[in-house]
Length: 308
Image (cartoon, rainbow, N blue to C red):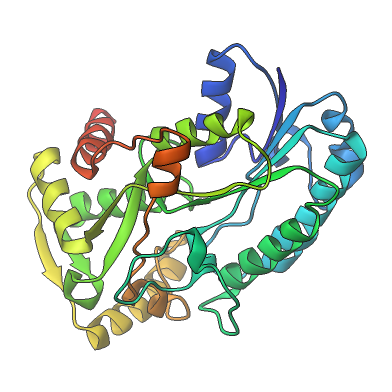
């Protein structure tokens, strides 16, 4: 089968491309490193000709302000139009868990996706508007939408691979400072499990949408399990909200001083003080999706970090 992966050299895209090729598929990757630009349809349009399935992962993901709407919305519009013109059989769009908004004291499933009128940052807003754009094209383009939760695992240490960057900082500084005293809960999915879920969508009916996640866990539990499986010694410190917000300003200052990508900034800090809990029960039932435990995923990730 001839497939296209936009963002095919990124954190998730490179893992997906590798697995698709191992399964015997012919894969065309769309990436800036190969001279493609989703803001310029002529740079990638020919790659869609003859393709049966397109996985759209290309997006701007970074901590600092940037042209999120231009890339994640206008670039997406170009990709959708090219896919319609190429008459591809299936378009699989990788959205984001952020489009649901915080889960507060509940657990989100696919039915909880509704309207939103305020956002934490421009990335959040661009992904929500992009979702509406994809839904509006469904009459012309058979589409599945996927909502990955917080993805972690071995892979390119880009801004999208935030958990590995975080773990490495814990190891180097010997301290894990956690927002909201470490009590907030997020949903975590191991990279290879997400890829397995994405691949299973190629033969599913169009217009089915799935949350692909793993376990819901507090940040304190994650830190304690990382300390256990990595064999590294570091302190786990849960910061009250005021101290965490102050640390975001320190992060901003130090990242500018040393020229490194920040993990979190003052404008995005409130996002990390929320619960982001999800259920993948629909995918487990219909896709036979079986994500590994958080402990197993962290064990494999820390082993990979230690080897390097």
